[in-house]
Length: 205
Image (cartoon, rainbow, N blue to C red; front, side, top):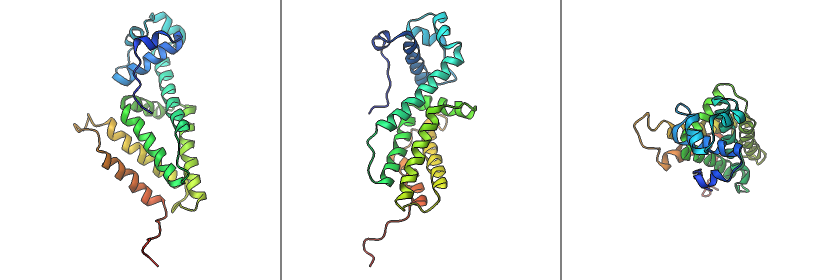
C-alpha cells in the first residue's frame, strides 16, 4: 500500500463538502506542515468559501485537529489491513516497519500528529495504534520469546520506532538526507536484540 496521499482536484470535487475540506486539509498539512497550515490554502484546494469551512470545523484549529485525527485513523486502518506474519516476533517487526514507513512517507503529518499528542490531546485512533503494538508484544510473550517484561518491551519498541521516525522529520534540520534503510534496520534490530530471547545456535549440541 502506498503512503502517498495526493488528492487531485478531480477526486476532491466528487466528495461531500466535509470530506472535501478534510482531504484538502490533509494535503496542505502534508505539503506545508502544521506551522504553515493555512485555511486559505485549504479553501482554495477544496473550492469552498471560508464561511463554509468554519461552518463544518469551527475554526482553523478545529480543522487542523480533525485532519490530525484522520491521519491517525489512516495509520491505524493500515495496521488493521496489513497481512501480518503468523510468527509473533516477525509480526512485531512488521508493525514497527509499517509505523516508520508512515513517518518516512509523510514526515510533516507525522510531526503534526506527535505535536498534538504532546499538547495533551486524546485521540482514540492513536490509542488503538499503540494497543496494536501492545497486542503484538503480548503474542511474543505468550510464545515465550521475550527476554524482558511485556511492559518494558512495548516501551522499547515504541521508543525505537519513534526515534527512527524522527530521523525522517529532522533530516532538513540536520542538513542530511533521510536515513539509509540499513540505519533504520539497525535501530529496529538493536531493540529486538534487547527484548527477544536469542535463538539457539544451530551449530551447538
